[in-house]
Image 1: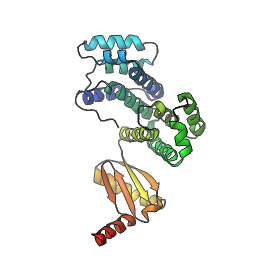
Image 2: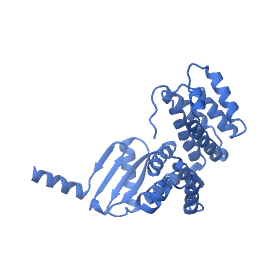
Image 3: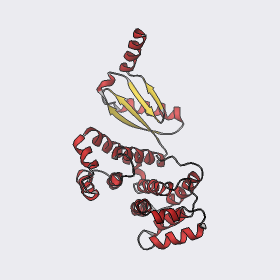
Image 4: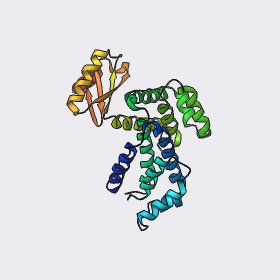
Length: 268
């Protein structure tokens, strides 16, 4: 997730509350409109500079931005975009970054009680792109149009995943992140956070049975004081045991890690 500081963090909190009030039935449309607005601010330097110019009164900035987007976006999205223009931003780029993240929040709201499924599907898409070099290259090929890449995403995911998963994967192609995989990982974390969860990535030599997953989920949730969503990565190189990554914390109980420690002690 984008790290907002100072005035930008305060602005983001205000805007997140507004998006939280969007009706579930219109949230997908609002998400798409917020993504489009973010793209406009990134591509239109004059608009971006005006909307973040603190020498211009907030009401004036809101009014101009409202006029620019009126009739082009859903009324609920228009309120968010106009309000965003009236906020103070620590960095000029934070406005567009905030609108993109708010679009992710709206997309999560569009799935209602299926937010955990959305997190799982985003993780699955990320794993698919990571493991498949042909797909990864196709989605990152600068000679292919965004529309062509979006069509590829549609053919892979439409009808097989939640519409929000397709929407967010398409947004990951926008180029605002270094790679598609990085975008998907960020969206995944945002989705979990909106659902009140943390994300733990668990590396194991083989798939974990449901009972083990439940015990691990319970233990991590107790340790971190909030529900934890597990992403399981099957990785034979760990040999045995588990490696758990949650935030900046790493809990490494794998056999391979213990063997590496033993080798270092012998060598040292």
